[in-house]
Amino acid sequence: MKKAGACDLKTCFLCQFSIPEWIAAVSDHKQHLFYKKNEVIFQEGNPVEGIFFLYEGKVKVHKQWGSDKDLIVRFAQKGDILGHRGLGSGERLYTVSATALEDTTVCYTDMAFFEASLKVNPTLTLKLMQFYADELQEAERKMRNLVHMDVKSRLADALLEISRLHNDTLFTISRQDLASFAGTTYETIYRNLQEFIQEKLIAVDGKSIRILNEKKLRKYVLSCPGLD
Figure (tube, rainbow, N blue to C red):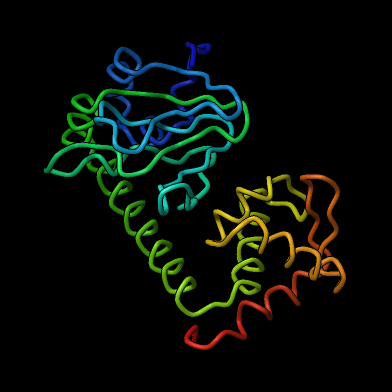
């Protein structure tokens, strides 16, 4: 991690939803930080010191799953918040980890200033509540999928979600990250990817995956019981 260039005071979540009179205070209190690909931004279990606002790049938010595996909770992109789960009134520890998937820039502010910002900016507080609600709905959807979906359907759902995040049918992701996002093992993901290739649903070149038949992938997702 190192300090990055100046923030434009327009792009990140905090700047977007703060009143104009508060922007000068934001400029004085936040840091613009750069993380290289695969660099850890914060670690599960560490004390919460502040909030991160994703300015550029993509980040995986992941949680320890068993003794030696990770479950990817979500992928974050430009405009998203990281570390906000530490806002609780109890012991403030990060409940997840965040790792840069590519060279990434974040805006960072300590927790005290962020809490002061929430008191001064009602729109910021409302938008944070809406962000929490959307994240909770997505977490409930993923939990439901783990219970009701077979592995092939979860893989189809994961591929469609990653494509949506990239706004492209072509994207790059490691097999291990794909397995962690779908809630299964590397070996199982590899086997099911080969089946999707044979069905001409996707094309694979190294870590690059291209979706060829989105409609049929979506049928795998919708065909599972308990999802109506």
